[in-house]
Amino acid sequence: MKRIPGRFIVCCLISVLLAALTVGYTACSNSTNNNTLSSIAITPTSPDNLKQGYTQQFVATGTYTIGLTDDISNSVTWSSSDPAVATISPSGLVTAVGTGTANIMATMSGVTSPPVSLTAITLLSIAVIPSSPPDLAIKSSQVFKAIGTYSDNSTADISYHAAWASSDTNIAAVSSLGVATGKAAGTANITAAISTITSPPVRLKIASP
Image (cartoon, rainbow, N blue to C red; front, side, top):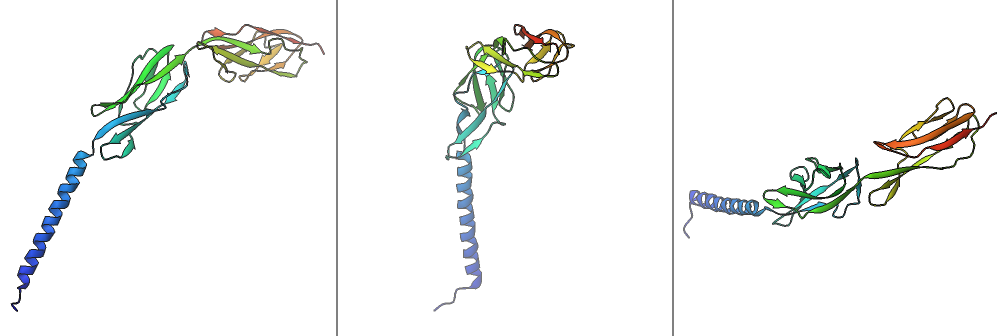
């Protein structure tokens, strides 16, 4: 039997290795080229109505042709169909600035998500409860709540967001949380306000010792 030179074997092995590397590179290259963005979905898809001045975070998820998904919220271009109703930041944070409905969308590499409808609502009125509090002794406290009614007829406890006021702080002081404290005998009106909306006054009587 003829002996095969070692140099020939080495050359054959190198050729096989190079061929394998070429095939692998081509496969990887094709896979990379085929890994393109095919669709974008944004969530939440049915957001709750958003109160004016409040925010809602949206997330954009991209689906690629090879089946992978990825959070691309910081890579897409976000848009609002009506910036007078809702604005959106580059990271997908929506702020309600008006009243009405706006469509939120995300776009990247020529692909645009289906729109998500967002309704922004505004505060119409504020009511302070209890509306007829019992007489309060000096140094005693009464907790009030502020209930807001919005343009979609919904209501919410806005006590921690409202600016509380007493018509006479020498008689009754009220904290930022709506807690009134009797200071001296007499009567004071308690109100709660947000922006230009102020509640009707609630009469609080501080009894004589």
